[in-house]
Length: 325
Length: 312
Image (tube, rainbow over all chains, first blue to last red; front, side, top):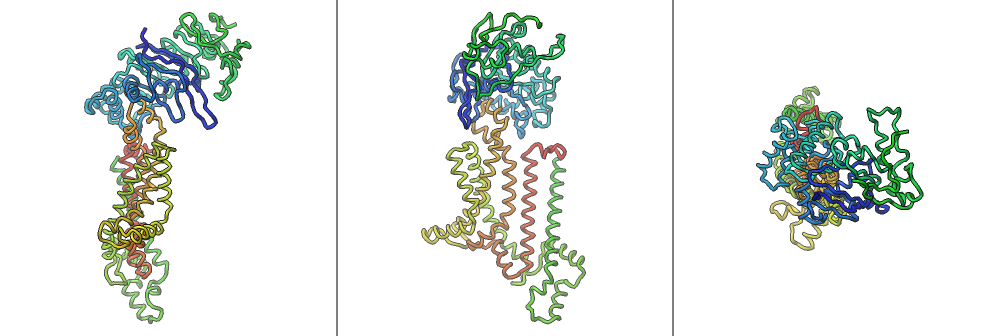
C-alpha cells in the first residue's frame, strides 16, 4: 500500500516562559490514499497539534522538535516555500468552529474562490464560477445567491458546509478534519458526516478525522489511533478497536460510553486525571490511572508494538474483551 | 436597510449640531451682558442701551434665539468687532489654508501610520516593532509646540534649509505638516498595531494559512479589512480635530489658518468670530463622526445588513 501521509516519530515542542513542554511525543501514523484514519483522545492529548503539524500551521513558540512528516512520498520541510505550496495544493483542513473560522468581512463566494484559486492557480473569474459549484456540491441551497452572503448571515451547519467547500476546493488528496462536528447540533452533525463521507468517496481523498467522540469514529473511520498524553497508545481497525480494545485506556474510554443496548445502571468513568505536561510520569503516562499497572509501567515507557493487525503501547495489553463481571 | 442606517446616523448628526449651536447661544447669554464685556466701563447708559437695541439684546430670549438660529442656518454669525466684516467671511478666508495643512497632514499620517502599525503587528516583538512603537510614543507624547520649536531651531536657524514660518511655498508646509503628522501617525500606528494583533490571532487567519494564502495576502486581504474598523474610528476622530486642533502648530509656524484666527480673536474678545469657529469645529467633528459611522456600514457587513443584527 502506498502511503499518502507518513508521520514518523513526531515530537512537538511549545516554548513556554518557564521552559519547553512536549505535548506530542513520538507519534507515528500512516494514512493511505482514500483511507480514513480516526484520531481519538481527550482534550489536550495532542491530536489537534498533530493535525496542525501536518498542515504546517505553527503558532508562535510551537515547533516540530523531532521526527518528520512525509506527504505523497516526499518529506515535508516546514521552512521550504516549495513545500508550503505543495502542502497547500495537496491538503485541505476543516476546523472545529466554523463561525470563527470564516472571515467575517468576506463573502462565502470570495473565500471559497480564493481557496480554489490558490490551489489550482486559476483565474479569478473561473474561480468565482467554481466557488458557486462547490457551494452547491456541499449542499448549500441557492448557491449563487449564498455566494454573496457573509458568514454571519447563514446557520452554523451551513457555515461548516462552506468551510468544507473551502477545504475541498481544487480536490486535495488529503483532508484533515479537526472535530468538524463538535460545534454543531446533533442533527446537523449526521448531515455533515454524510457529506464528508460522500465527498471523500467522490474525490478519493484520504482523511485524517480528529474527534473526542468514539461514536463518530466508529461511523467514519477505517482505522483508529487512540492518543493519550501526547502518544499513540493504540492503533487498530475501527471494528477491532470496538470489539477488542487492547489498551486499558481504550477500554476505559469504551466503558465510559453509554450504549443503548447495554444493560448497565451506571457508567464507569476512568478514575483520576490526565497528567500535566509539566509532570509526565517517567514510564507509561497512563500508569497512575491504570488498574493493571505494575512496577515496570512506572519506570519504562512502553513502545507501540504490532499485535495482530493493530498496535498497542502497553506492557500488559488486554486479552479479548471479557464480559463485565 | 442600508438607507435606513444612513438616515438614522444623519438625523443624529443634525441633532448634535443643533445642540451645539444652541449650547453656544446659551453659554453666551449665561456669561452676562455682552455690552458689559465689550464696551468700555465709562460709557453712558444711553450708549449701552443703543447697542443693546442694535444687537437685539432688548428682545425676549426666545426671539433672540429664533433670530440667532435663523442667522446661524444662513451661516451668519454677526459682524467682527475688529474689522467690521461679517465673521463668516473672515473665517472662510482662513479655512482653505487650514484645510491645506490638515489634508497634507492627514495623508502623510495615514500613509505612514497604517503601514508602520501593520508591520509592527506582523513582526511583533522584533526590532521593527520596537522601533515603530518608539517612534509612535515619541510622536504621540511630544508636545507640538516643543517639536515645532525644535524643528525651527534645526532646519531654519542652524541648517537654513526651510523657512521658519509663514505661508506660500511647499517649503513652508514641511515643518508644520511634520509636526502635526508625527503625533497623528503615532496614534494611527498604535491603533493599527493593536487592531492587527487581535485580528492576526483569530481562527480565520489560520484558515487562510491552511489554504496556503501567502503572507502578503493574509495580512492585507484577510486581516487588514477586519482591523480597519477600529483604525477608521481613530482616523475619523482625528480628522475632525484637524480643523480646530492645529491651533498650537499654526501659531508656532505663523500659519494663517483658522487656528491662528481663533487665538487672535479670543485675545481681542471678537466674540462673533469665536462663536463662528466653535460652530465650524463642531460641524467638522460631527461630519467626521458621520463619515466614520457610514464607513462602518461599508467596512463591516454585520453593520451593513441592518440595525437589528448588529452585535455591538
